[in-house]
Length: 451
Image (cartoon, rainbow, N blue to C red):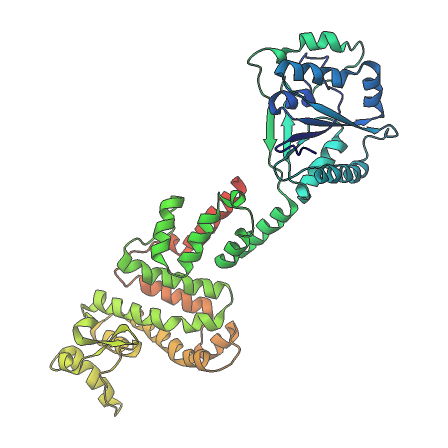
């Protein structure tokens, strides 16, 4: 038995304006789809009323035969008779019946075949039944909608129907007739659910989870927004190399601070804010120390003219360059005198080892006259010392109340102080910059809604 490959099969209910409209002398939807898609097989689903018309003058097969002859190609037909079907408004009937019929059609198809579904012919219940089947995603198919030639609902007229005369008068038989077919994208229920999950992940800044769900969908369904989610996922990891590459693809600049020497500090601060918004209080507390040290150092340079590196030596640890205070470079300097004097008052000795926020605060207290700045640094230094070790070294539940009890500040207060400290650095930050992740989220969600 010869196997026929690459067949196009049209399944279609038969409606009141098929095969040719007596009202406007244009193709009905079935004939129009066959004219432009040239299916090899047409499966006509007929209720009692349509069967009566068919038996009266064979109008459907007559027009399809004339079209096939005009196009010089074979086309076979199958009629599914539902003679008992008189309640053509009942959605449940059509959904169940179409499901069985299309399932049977699929059993006769192979991977090279294409199924077309006509959702412009038949009753509203018939059209809805087909659309719901596509939404559930059980049967991959091209869903075809045919616009009326007058741009509004076709009037159904059957009195005095002369199929042979209508064929001769059919304006769509003229060369250059407009193709009124449109393939409509019917999102599957699975796609709808997954995209809702993606949106929820984005709104809580969990971009890797959103990306994992997006990558479970076919690539053509996520082409509008997948790169943006990837860009966000790399951004939250501070992977600026891949962020910059993706910006070239998406043409969306998500980084408000552009200078590479500055953006790492601001972007890191934004990730701290995200941890706070997600209620990840342990990670929030653990991430404070690095930004506090960096901010104190930048402030010391901007406000007091002191460059910490001028008083440090570099060394390598675990393959990475580190720095520590240099006793030699500090000797005889005002910076060295301030540090030694501070610890002597406490009957301690300043050890020229790693650079800590405590050292930078001591220097700022001495060299700056800005009372507000000193208070902010005092508050953050206390936060760091009072709770950082608890979160880092003990198995303990950390909540916003825990933070308040131990430091005197809620997480939002601490984050507010960090933001304010940025104003004392060389980094120029507008108030809106702190909302840049939410702006990025809006961009992603906008692209998802535009697909």
